[in-house]
Each structure stands twice: as C-alpha cells, then as structure tokens.
Image 1: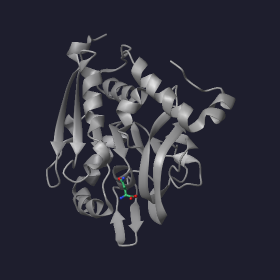
Image 2: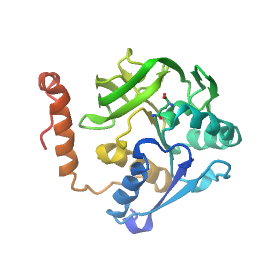
Image 3: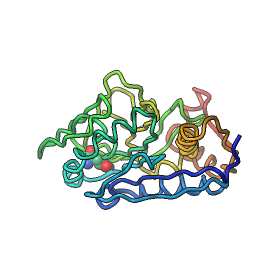
Length: 256
Ligand code: GLN
C-alpha cells in the first residue's frame, strides 16, 4: 500500500466569490489540515464565476452557500459546466455542497423572485417556503458514529424524492421541516443545509470525504486516526444542550 506522502488531494472550491456565506471556507481549511496532519499532500484551487474548470484534475469539489441573488448569478455559469460536472459525479467524484450549493445540485430552486435552474445532477428540487428555517440542527447520519451538528438558515425547502438522505433530523428543520430528512447522499456526493462550518464540527464527515477521494484515486486506503477529543467534547456539549432527554433515551449520547 502507498505511504501517505505519495498521495495528494486537490480540492476545487467553486465560486467563492459568490457562494461564501457563514464561513464555509472553513470546510476547505479543515480538509486541507486533516490531510496535511496525516502527511497527505493537499492543495486547493479556487474557481470564480467565469473560470473554466478541468474536473479531471479535482478530487473533491466544494460548493458553499449563498443568497438567492448570488445563486441566480451562479446559475448562469452552471450551464457551461453541467456536463463535465455530471461526468465527474457519475465517475464517483467527491462533492460537498452546502445550503445554496446543495440546492444548486438539484433541478431547480423556485423563489418568489423567479426560478433558479440547477445543475440537475440529482433528482431533487427546492421551493421557497414561508419564513426561514434558522437555528442549530442535529442529525443522526449513517456516515458518522456520533450525531452530526451544525447551523441552518434557509428559505428553500428541498424535496429529495427517493434519494438517500444525509441524515435524520433529531433537532431542527432539515430539508423541508416536515419529512424528518436532512440533505442528500448520492454516490460520493453530500448535499446538506448544515453550515457551521460543517467539517470542523464533524470530523467524521470530513474523513469520509477524504477517504472516498483517496480510494477513488489510489484504491483501498486506511486513514490514520487523529486526536479528535476536542471535537467530540464539543459535539457532546451541543447534543447535551439541545437534546439531552431524547438522546439519553435513544442511548446515543457521547461523552468522549
Ligand atoms: N438562498 C438559499 C435559501 O435561502 C440558501 C441560503 C444559504 O445558502 N444559507 O434557501
């Protein structure tokens, strides 16, 4: 098996000039750092609107959140990259898309001000609802051994049809405030409403993305464990604060 220093991850950060709400750039920093701590080389390439993108050079693609107005501008650029992005996804390319970026993976986002056409990479769609869903959110996800925590702030309600959700809502609104689902997982793509930023708060999810990217490029790999005691303490604090009784009953409270 390869040693870590032989391996390299290239992260493509799409449209940080527009999709840049809530410090989601922290997700890039987290992926870079968790690679570098393990001796895995990592670099990030930023693509602003209008730049051409060679998806063949990328191992992880990140799309952040944005206002409806910014999404509308981004949407005009998406047509040019749609086919290449679809090939990347179908070819098991790794994607993490947050909030506005998550909505853009779908067919459309219908707002009161007009329809924002998405990438149609996934069979999902979003419609603006009454009021915004704002606040802390906690999920149970198959991708993490402890609850996934974050912060949501969205006017859109996302309907994922038969797609696999990222998690089940333990606290907060999620995709539409009713279904109990949050986000979507398709192949190596995660779409989610969770800001936070997501990855520093949920190191398991960060490692899921890194592992999928390395596996796709190099074959089976095993990530070395990092010392995540602080992250797990922070997670336990949030869970205690928002769902003590519920979690104690379900016996999924974490203390370490
Ligand atoms: N503009 C979208 C909405 O309000 C996404 C918001 C965001 O990215 N936080 O639903």
